Image (cartoon, rainbow, N blue to C red):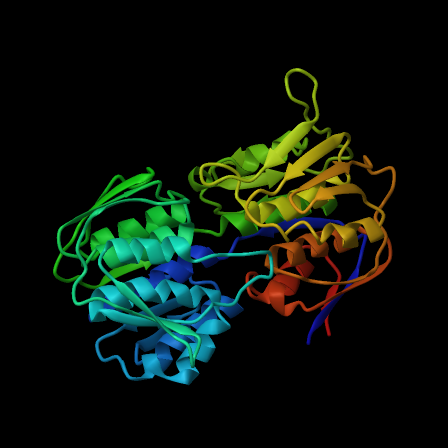
Length: 434
């Protein structure tokens, strides 16, 4: 088990460029299973979750070639379908949540798939009902194999239909789209997730020959085609990493430029930080966050306490609430955070309280942060990273704290952030991996 030792209190300055988007990369890499032709993808982040998925595709017979840093070609023209039913494959899938995105392509092209309960962050229940219901609507049948505790999914053919999703699940929407592009007839998906990474997946599939309309809305119409061809694709910058860097710049920055962020695809993220009083200047496709001695938290128009809550796109992504909470600890004013989507994601705040933050955890979904306005600095301590996003939030807190901190279980951070300590040390941080 690795850990970070952080010497807090060192200001950061300079320029940093976000990696490719983890969530988009997982989707588009799995989409390469839909065609026997070669697909080239650029700007793939070099992180644990993505690398494990690439290795899993290699295991099932996908020809993977690393063309250069962050650029790969994939060709799924000769898969070992027997391996898909092996205990080894099921075990690997159960430790990697992104593997669930293989189901839609495998079902569409080979009419069968096996799924175990996937791994991932321990942030509460992350049910797969939306995926299953979508596949059932398309004609798939499920059989539970009690001896192996896995589901076998099969369909002689998939047939397009109308479906109203019970939730705007991002991975659920992606999976259903990938199954529907090769289904017979027309599929209409209402209450579909519409975040930029879903849009990117749809655009990539369109270049491969899929017929998808309604992109960027929550109503997608997909006309099934017989086959798809190869294409080239470039992954967007990771909006969660951009938000994490904004948080770092607010807490410990002495002027930080975040390069090539794809401003048009950040949605409400910059405004969420501005509500905490953080100044963000847009310069072309870059963000510049100047040094601020103080940042003042907004209130609502009637003077009541500011509330920030997560919501499906174009609402605020839940992946950034942890970072926003840390930033709020040094703002001037109070904020109520409402984490609606996962019931365990706020439990990391007890570590911030140990560091001196003024936070009231109301229940598993709500926390009130009373900002110190830099009058009281957080103090270093020992903590562990419970998930990717809490891990990066604790790292930001530790960089702003007095004294040394230790963060254990940083493998969680490595799942989502590429070579993070070297990139931050280049800005002036003092972070050591042990």
